Image 1 (spheres, rainbow, N blue to C red):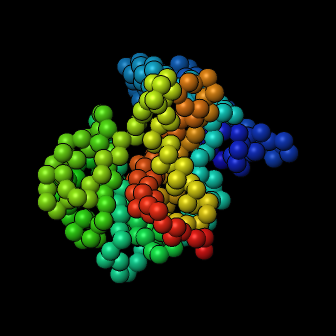
Image 2: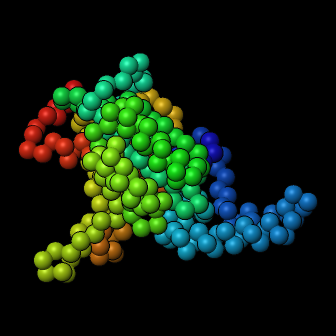
Image 3: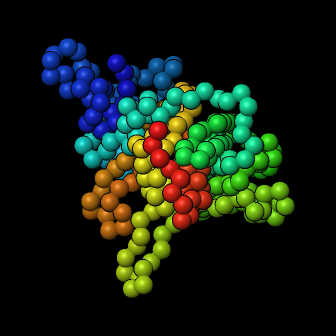
Length: 289
């Protein structure tokens, strides 16, 4: 087995713990490799310095626990996989339909941040008592104009009811959203869904939890109740598996933080599922199946 820890859970953790002495265990971390790897034509001093600088930047970007897991290979108890493997296997069972429904379709879009390279479009269909994923589209790095054209084209092709995109600070979605709300084909469909929507209560003393957590909690609950079924697609399962949760009891804003290195598909799914939840105002139309 070869991998990076994802909390003290799952088969990889049990194999590493090796209580039954079934494995020979090697624990190698990025810092030691970069510092101690012998210099060569393929590994000159310039590459070593660049790699060390990269680790310094990652230390600043990540929490201490996240860095320890990702680059030091340490199994952190306060970090765990958000969507359990068993749950992913139970929900990711659908094949793409040969004929797509022409109404009650909702799309969540995850637009690459500055320097990102993938955009994802996740489309869900709402049946009377359940939700099915009908499409997953991933595009590589492209101009914002191309992403805007994709959204308009998909809106027409799938007769989308609502489109949720990240229009938060630092996202390329801000400019795209501004143009989409001026387009008569999408202005009544597109919804800005910022990942960090924080507001104060009446006394202005307590911050409400981050909106991103609300979206993920809703998707998790729908999956656990089998109110939503997803496509049996390797990229989708990989994205869901990559979502991790960090417990940070010392925080005064939120006790948990969600993160991952391949979460763009999960982000799109969470947005589309949230839009569907908001549509069921004063209605009870879900039931497990």
